[in-house]
Amino acid sequence: MNLPYVLNRRILINQTTNAWKFPGGLSEPGEDIGNTAVREVFEETGITSEFKSILSIRQQHGQPGAFGKSDMYIICRLEPSSFHISFCQLECLRCEWMDLTELSKTKETTPITSNIAKLLLYGYREGFDKIDISMREFPAVYAGLFYKLYHRELPENYRNMTDLQ
Image (cartoon, rainbow, N blue to C red; front, side, top):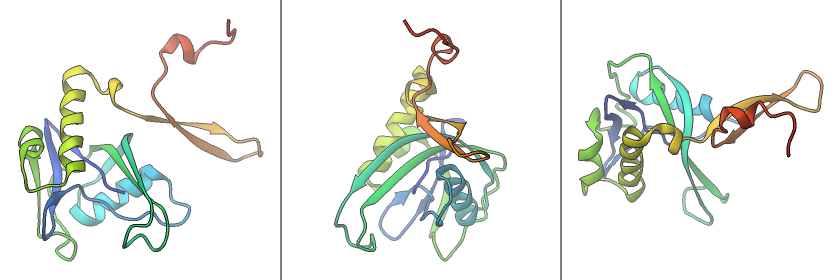
């Protein structure tokens, strides 16, 4: 799971041996998407944050390094609650807040990273409601249990509908 982390049109990214990328890593068994995103950003960069939405999902099969499993790469949008970077030198060569426009144009990144930078620029211009896949929690059919539903936000008049006609 990787995630962009935006602050005033600047995004938190780290540099590996071959490219700039978003901080991220694997979910722990039973760990929710947003919790994984927040934990991984903190472990790699020292930045604390809050989950806001999913921006995109990439799915692939039969790739090396996926432990023989199908691989889903979920990119989340987080809101920072701290800003000072203290990055993990075992996982990153560098870590910084980079301008989104610069990131969208650099050749030293992956197609996913540059495309998500462009998606975020669109979100700033047109509103994040145009790009976010938000999460709502609902009670499960089993007493005391809940599930999380991820979807585009519904207009309020549809969220509060009781009579579907």
